[in-house]
Length: 229
Image 1 (spheres, rainbow, N blue to C red):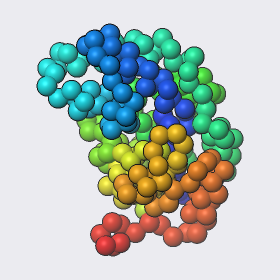
Image 2: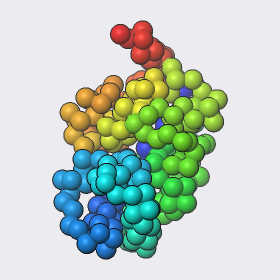
Image 3: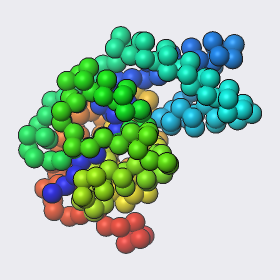
């Protein structure tokens, strides 16, 4: 049986504007600095610790921790106001679950906020495993979160697929030797996803469903990276 893994932010939940506004708020109220959307996009999709550290590498850890706290306060208070479904995600995920596919989430988000988002859109009951930022020491684009999800599901890379919207998702899936399907929504381009390791790229959830059905019905598990090369 194929195991289907999904990113959360930007893939199932449209959280882009919430994330952008939370970063803008944190930099303005924590450092008195303005930050552009272009600058934020440079590291968009990474865990907060990584993104703040990469954007302001000279800051001590105590200041990064303070920025994270400010970000989270704003993000949590505004969450339900801004978060919506990526169109079609709910219908497709319910259909995949009804067909018997084990489904999992692999996200760089905290568990409590992951569950809040899934409950908000009524999808919290569909997933057999949820890997979040507290599940592993290392995070995307490294393979450990996907590898951890496979262990939880008792699965192997050859029969697993990871669907995500960011280059970090694609790179993590590639490093974990699973098939990778990039979803273009409102942040990264087809080129961004393919250059980071996507096996294919689609432009909406109807195409996600079509591609997953094609891949899983073909009965051709993904070769290892070494075999491909």
